[in-house]
Image (tube, rainbow, N blue to C red):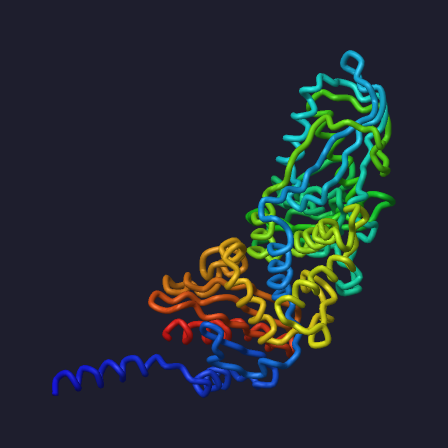
Length: 470
């Protein structure tokens, strides 16, 4: 009798956490959402647990990067590096290079200041102190399309809309730091990082004595072949430092200007000009620096939902796909998308059933269903070669990436998921780990009004909370 009572109690305890689709709908109703604005899908070991409009085509926003990441990790070796090379066909006489120095871009999304220093320090060991010719930038690994036509057509100056080129530096973005001046009526203090003569600064902003004033506006405008940063507004004397990130417009000249500046800081004089052209066919390598491994770069893309990295990687995917581009030259986004579609063919998604226009999700033209994205997540989960790398790249709830400030609870660290956001579009998709069971795969999407979109995140967080009890 006691044994039976214990079993009954145990079953009741288990059933207390047996979430049903009706429970899901109650949570949705509590948050005042209509089911028609949502696409939800949850499964366990390939078996559907919950589905609401799971086969409805919806805008996924940055959930698109799940598909992009799966294709990249599957089709390019995980230890692949993208090299940036200094080359020349000229001879070295004494401490002079008797011709031009060419920087050949390898499409490295992680080519930042530290990498530039490494490259210049490699070059220093040639003993060259004077470059008699020009600085030449060879960006021919990619085509000349700087802004993917699949993005939203309106260009903005923010870093998420930075241009894409085989020669890129610091994510083709500049950091603008603003601090109050020393006293009222002083101009605010502005620091550009990295700074050189590629960017002109116009500082019209003032420091004010009144507290809680922060009306600083930072804009970037095109200035011929270069850019200008304009600062306006007011900032209180007791205000802290603020930072704004702006994209630049000319990646080749942006990179070349920094190369020339870094060479100058190491005592190397350049007598010629900066120009864009192919390196001479008979050029020899003088210095080279590799990128991070592909798996690390893909992790950067997923953790921080980096549009620049996503698009750079997909053009590299086109360059590395020998069926599409046997010469690994002038790689296009069109070919990159075709390579992703061939990956989705193998996953089992029919091309007529989805729309893929932009690989980062920076568009309302992409259309996928919750079940389609879940199918990609399951395909990744079942591929041991790439799953550990993909999983480590996903933001961890309450800990890092785009989920750092969400789901803050010890139990929530079991959640690893990609976020998505556009005005009126919210997404969350990934895996929910469980201590005694296999992980759940889930995809949550909202398409609706801007105001309600802001409330979709707490709705999704509540749904996650309930799933963690299972």
